Structure formats: structure tokens, C-alpha cells
View 1: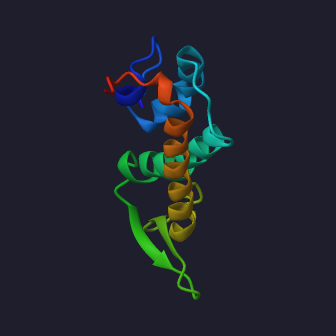
View 2: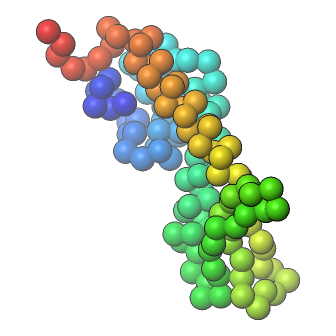
Length: 128
């Protein structure tokens, strides 16, 4: 987004987390027209993918914690985090179904393309 529309003042979009936090003010500053549900979809993906990765995989430090891919009896695939020798404080955590997340990502990519289509005159790029 920053490459196409340019940087925003005090509205870094360096990560998806930053995009979700800063995009509303960035869009106002740039005068962008947003597709319906763009921010809701971005926030849902942050919660369901970015936060899951950050809190359940990358930054989980317990040596008893293991992450795996699990399938239910219908073949639905999820990521799961469990503790070996669990205590009362340990929680079992599962991601949303991966096929659902892929559909939401596809919708989000379509929304980003629509964002560019709705704002052709707002690009920071020189188009000849």
C-alpha cells in the first residue's frame, strides 16, 4: 500500500499489524475510498492468522508447548497448540479451519485490488 499510495505521516504500514492499526487514518490522509468491509476483513485476518502466529507459535516460550497440524474426522485441517503434561493453566488452542482462512485471504486480496481500482488518481507512482 505504501509503495502504491505513498507513505503516510505517523501511519506506518510496515506490517499487517501496523496496517490494521493505522490504515483508517492513512486512508483519510490519502483521501482513499475503501471497499466495503475492507477494515473488518483486515482485522479478522490479523486476529485469526497474525495474532495466532505471534502468540501461539513464534513467541510461545514454554518448552512443553508443541504446535501441529490436525485433521478432524471430516478432513478439516487446523493448526493446534498443546502442552505436553498440561497443567490447569495450560490451554488447548486451535486456529480456524485452514480452508476458511484461505477463502478470507482470497477475499482480502480481491479487496486490495478493488482498493487500487477505486483510487487510480491517488497513486504515488508516475504512470505515463
